[in-house]
Image 1 (spheres, rainbow, N blue to C red):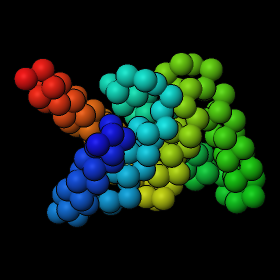
Image 2 (tube, one colour):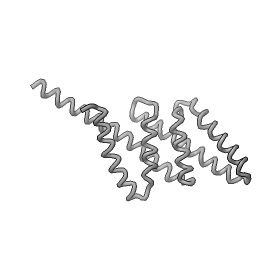
Image 3 (cartoon, helix red, strand yellow):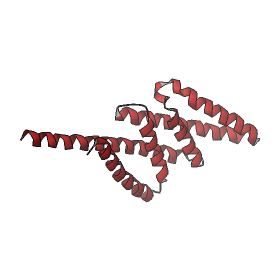
Image 4 (cartoon, rainbow, N blue to C red):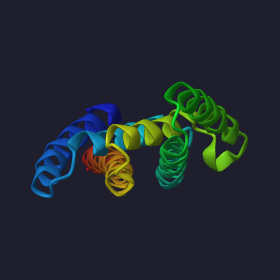
Length: 160
């Protein structure tokens, strides 16, 4: 079995567990999967750095979406509100990538649209996306660990 196969297998098992736990906790299943997606696309090689970077970018997106919602509530002309907030926030989400910690633009957009999709429930977005980052980390580590254990067992058998 390849490392990719084992990571995929453990990811499927963890996804099944997540879908049941999130349902019991009255959380939206998809928010966790959005955080998990962020983990998968974060441009880091080390799993812990990947988890931190994906969530940092998600959280920045949450912040900018909440700022958008707030500014929009102050401006009573929808077309102007949309122009100013969506244009400005899109600029910021991309421009902040000049900082290494926030350089994964898709993760920032995921945090932003998740918060919009939850109608501004930033607490649900923050918790769900964090759960997703942790799920990504666990699935990655579990698969790699299983691969190492499998290979160390085969090495022992070859020596004997």
